[in-house]
Amino acid sequence: MKNFFTIIGGMGTEATETFIHILNERTQATKDQDYLNYILVNHSTVPDRTDYILDHSKPNPLIPLAEDVKQQSALHPDFFAIPCNTAHYFYDELQKLTDVPILHMPKETVAAIKDYAPNAKRVGLIATEGTLHDQIYDHEIINAGYELVKPTDKIADQTMTLIYDDIKAKNEVDEGLYHLILSQMVESLKCDIVILGCTELSVAQHRAGNHDYPVIDAQTVLADKCIELAEANRAK
Image (cartoon, rainbow, N blue to C red):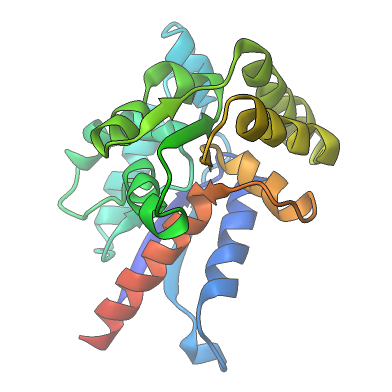
């Protein structure tokens, strides 16, 4: 297969399924051959990223992720996409293992804010405890000239409940809780836009019904970037 990219997913599987749905749905296609060529590695047994980031005595996700990158690099994809925000904690180490470019989801998401909310100044972030702790998004947001707004401890705990207790554990989305989190970020913390910095939050966004809160979904941004690059490579 030529002109393909590799998706390293499975973190978690439901979130990866949502990413694939977004990717295919946003691809302009009227026949089978219009869709993109890609390989999906659904590596569901990769250890929990947040657990390791908060406690390095826990199993290290870098080990299996590094194996995936090296194995897939031998197939010569055009690029890699990793639809897990927290896994970008290992981005630099993974990129050193391959000449194949790895898309950086947090960087792409922050760069896209200007298209979603041109007048935004205060950028909120909701994510896993691991992503908040390792500041994957912090530097990108601040370096882009925005004011970073992190969730309160209460909102952060509510977000972890939504991600781990509802979506990961039960494959359910508590619509009321999701909307409550967004309302607090926008109405109480005065965010102009809120980054959905966890792929399970993308699941919530696609299942929880309509709302008017200004959000930017990192998974959707990554999907759009994959489409842009894949179509450009196909046209060469």
